Image (cartoon, rainbow, N blue to C red; front, side, top):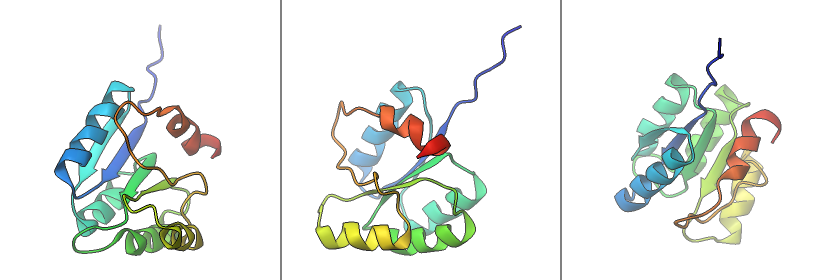
Length: 126
């Protein structure tokens, strides 16, 4: 009898609808279960309640920014791999994210057709 393989869950917290849906479609096509949130408070609640394997977190969000979410999650879910998504790509955002506990390999700019193989490695061994 085959043992079912556990599907890894990625939570995408992104307020821009086109980007959020593009990430969801791309990640689903790669075999991930995908949860989405469009505001900071919604994303924090889902990260705590749904226990995703990985969080893709926008920096600029309504209601609560990505840095505030990162700070709260590092206290309550220190084991959760978090990748910050930033359209700005500013060095100060990267430094602040690292200081707050984002994964060192986690700064990406999403683009259609990007490779998501690295995401499969983060939950187990970063």
